[in-house]
Each structure stands twice: as C-alpha cells, then as structure tokens.
Image (cartoon, rainbow, N blue to C red):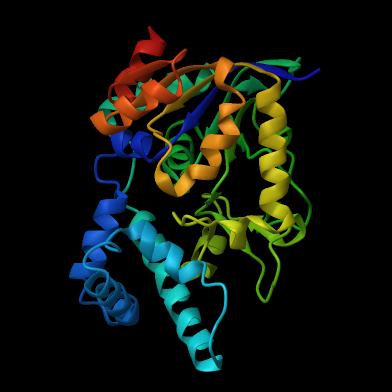
Length: 324
C-alpha cells in the first residue's frame, strides 16, 4: 500500500521567502489601486467605490475577489455582463502580476531547495510503495517547475497527482516514461501552466491540460490565455465544484491519510481559507510543524494547534535546517 513519511504543505509565505520579488496579496491590492492600465480600469473603479462606500471595510484584495467571483444573483443582463468583465479583469490581473518571467528562486537558495526536493522525490524504477515525502501547495506559481527545468531538467519529472494531458501530446503522459526521479507535487489551487480547453463550461479531468516549460509552441500559443487557478476568494465553490479540483483534492486527502507527519511552510490558514482550517483540524495529531513569519499568525496558531510546533521563521531557513 502506498504511504509517505512526511508531507510538506506550502503557502504564499514559502514563495515569498524563496523569491523575494514575488507579489503578496497586499502587493496586489496596492498595485491595483495605483494602476493606470486601461485593461483593469473597471476593476480598479469597482474596488475603489466599494472601499469608499464601506468606509474602508472592503479594502482587502480577498474581499474584492469574493465580491467579484461569488455574487449569487444578478438584477439584470447588464449587471451580469458587468461582472463577467470584472471577473476577466481580476483573473488576468492576478495572472499577469504573479506569473512574471522575472520570478525565480533566489540564487543563494537553489542548491538548498534542490536538496530538499531530492530528499522528497521517488525513483521511477521503484519500489515506490513507501515514499519519503509529498509536496502539496496552495500556490499557483511556477517557481519549483522553473528551478527543476533550468537546473536539473535531465533527471526530473513532475507528477501532479492526477493524469493531465500535455498540450503537445494527444495521449496522457506518464511521469515514469522519461526521467529517473519523480517529484510528486499536488497544486490544490491550480497552476499557471494548466489551461482549460477552449469553450469548456465545466472544469473536468477531460478538458484540463498542461503546457510543459520546454514546449515553446505551447507557451507562445497560450501567452495571452488565462491559466487555471483558484483566486484568494472567501468562497471557492465556483472553481471547486467541477470534477477536476474534486479529483485532485480527494487524491491529496487520501495521501494525507497515509502520511505519518504533516508540516506547513509559509501557510498560516488565512481568513479566505477558513474551510481548509476545518478540514485540516482532523489531521491535528499528524501536524508536527507550522512555519509562519508574521507574529499575528504565530500567536493565533499556537491556540489552534497546541500539540504542534508553531515556528516563527523564514521558510528558506526552515528548509535549510531540514537539510542538515
């Protein structure tokens, strides 16, 4: 039976730690408010109007995402079209700001991170019934993909946990086909290299495909397309209701049931992920370490997870300590 020694769950604090230039939610909020780009004008005006009307109560980016993506009904067709424009601008704004080609793992941490990933991968030649580690992420950035592609491309392949069609191939790819080391990487909120087939109305396993970093034609074709990811909204039902994310989450939860130890790096259970807090509480006895950088999260999580080690530290320093 398949099992794991440890699972590491990565949050936005991890990406910010290994890539200081990576945008935070606050950065996104500030940049939208200061934006002069015409393609985001309606979204900016909508956000500023809500901030003014609420006396500042709706000034967060999470609130903006929730209001745009979770409106339960529309008064008329014009309002429905208005929110479709806002949704498109919001998704594209996030994608544009967080998927910059300039974002990469800092040079002084590349070797440390590769060592960490190597210790948590498995061999394609097996046996693989008991694997050392599983990496799970709430991030949709491509920091780890770019690192492995540029530094260790010849020996790595990524197993996203579910069968994804590759854009350049008509068959489902098997990660064991080409590379001796397999990195199992479950991205629970989607990824900037996953796309929904054109004209698809429902997100399912049959119509989501990946664009590999080495596939230049695929990247050029989808340069202006919006990748498949779940924004930082309080309500994620709109995205998680299809079979695709349901399959991914069920696979990940099944893996956690078979994992001895769970650790969080750079994830403090933000208010927009309140449903996940309830979900992970059932694994409370397995959770060993929760690494956060800010004092507010540190103090709050000590009360929620009294038997776990709540560590106030930088994510990259924590990983370096694991490598020793």
